[in-house]
Image (cartoon, rainbow, N blue to C red; front, side, top):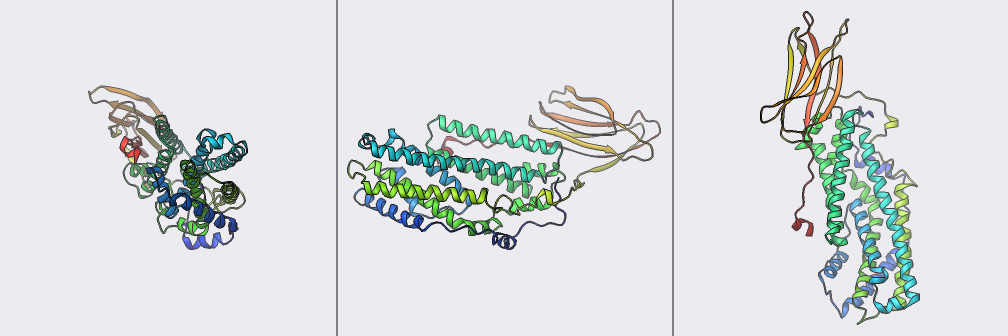
Length: 437
């Protein structure tokens, strides 16, 4: 486990001096110029034909507003707009006269390919970044079975989230619906981190269980996404360029959507197609450059000092706040009972004997009494000097952990232990109404 001794959560002032070393080369002037030209073309298309559907109205309202403030929300928005554009540029979605024009058809196919390649770059970045953040956090978690449990919880949570998306797609949900759900899931991840940092609800039990999680890490994850927290410095430094690109791709999408919907009344001109080609070239180039900047060509995100690197810090033994010590007299036992309401809860233990000049051991076993009164031996009796273990419960009931010193005629045992029960983290089930919002 990486050491955090003597550290405090990162501050905006510190990040400001750090980011001074990594300026992002400003976007090309072509971004603002072509964005303005596309905006002018969409205004002409709307002059004689106002929005004719709820989708057009929503898209127009979004184009007239500000880009999202958060970096990751902008990433998801760019991804949504690119996927919508790829859908619109598919040959089957173009107006029939454009499908019959081989020259224009080739242009649209080329633009679709550029967007697809850029979308792939963004998807790869998001996947790698998500794993990197999780693995970075895990370097500060106790490196034992508890870390394994956290990984299992995350994998199960991500499978449930993917199942939600698959269900929405199979039921005919739109691309907008899909990305609304994906962003809601992202916010769920943030709330879970905030709950972990604040130690509320299920996560209070989790923090108690994860003895050894540095307080500096909990403080950091509680405050990191605050509106004026450390991430705000990142948004102010690099956000404006990303906001401009988000607005640009949104207007490209709006232009194509309006042009296709009004083609019979106002056919798209060669000059307008030329502007769109230039805009797509500039957008895809600049967006990939931005992703490359934060992913490969600098340390701005990859090694940003939100957490001190594990390589720079030494090993630190887990804190012992939740361990208990008790004397188990000769001929006696010590028992801990845990009431379990939910199946698939984890019961875990970590114990050892405080040894003197003579090495000693103690008997240990686990049993369960279900609501009907039936007893089941979960872990057979065996003698240990120390042990760590866990299991997932199959039934609700009372689980009893028993340390047995009854076989000893003379020696008491000084037992140092901690036990806990972690309920399963249940993903919220969205109603049909919530999915449609």
